[in-house]
Amino acid sequence: MPQIKAAVSHAHGDPLQIETLNLRAPLMGEVEVTLKACAICHSDIHFAEGAWGGKLPAVYGHEAAGHVTAIGEGTRGLTIGDPVVVTLIRACGTCATCGGGMPVLCSAPAAHDGPLTTLDGAPVEQAMNSGAFAEKVVVDQSQIVKLPADMDLVAASLLACGVITGVGAVVNAAGLRAGQDVVVIGAGGVGLNAIQGARIAGARRIIAVDMTDDKLAIARDFGATDGVLATDSKPWRAAKRAMGKGADVVVVTVGAIPAYDTAAQYLAPGGKIIMVGMPHSGATSSYQPVMIAASGQAMIGSKMGDVVIARDIPWLVGLYQQDRLKLDELVSRTWTLDQINDAIADTKSGAAKRNVIVFD
Ligand SMILES: [Zn+2]
Ligand SMILES: [Zn+2]
Image 1 (cartoon, rainbow, N blue to C red):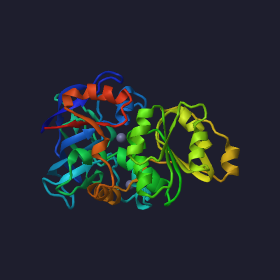
Image 2: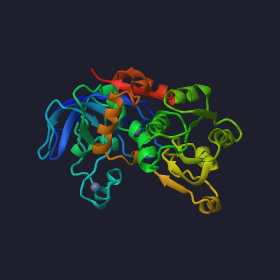
Image 3: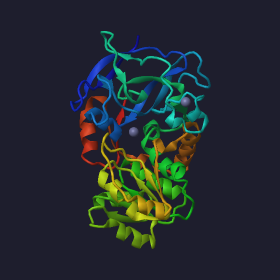
Image 4: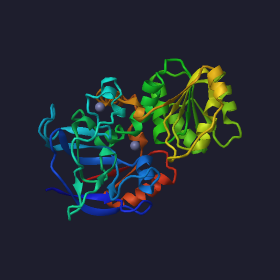
């Protein structure tokens, strides 16, 4: 059985430990991918800190890219050596949600037990169906998308979560039409991608809302036409002045409850709030139902940008290769797996961009 180096969580809130684990070979419908890159997402940090529970010990990491190095029986269209993106979206393809076009919501149970064990044979949780803070992963073939041979794999890793979540929130969940106005609350890893999704979709005004001028400046690089400081007492006033009206779409990309409590303030009649940021379990937000009802507005939850990976990831790769989607600019720094706790600390410090673990 192959042995791999992985960053393991033994207790929520503790630093990850670099350890050697067993990774079993791919079974029916599974693929082994030797990773080149895995970006660190705030979801990894929330899980590591225990915000959403989950079994321990566990390996987090779910924004990855690498090369196929082993193929289980029953897979189709893959060859050893293919470059691929690895996502957490495992979809059976045959349930009602998959058939209805929403594979991100598939809840069919896994076909097999997880592939990770300690050297003593005790199970280790493959968190988010991926466990990609590790040299290799074994995942269901539905989770991967083949890439062009010349695609940069550090850039490609970002497509697995942050980019599809942000771009998809605007393009898929909101169904933004060209010429509409968008407010994006939070200009972090997901927010910057909602901003560039709005730019790609042809938005008229794109207003970024965040806590610091530095983040608003980065937001402008990604296509925001205006920036508003969330620290203002009523930031929606400046946003509405810039748009000349309320927003057609407000995308909440942060898990902060005040962002949810105030999102409707930015909205035009008939507008939509797209709820992407994920607060801790049990946190609640309040809003005035009468305003939403009387204004014909909508609040829509969006998981992973409602992505259909086989459709959307090749589309995004094409945009990247035409210089219409920024990926390289989303990377703040690359790190080795041994440096993962420092990389996580850097992400927690509020860095807007992605830290990426790169494997040799
Ligand atoms: Zn993520
Ligand atoms: Zn399904």
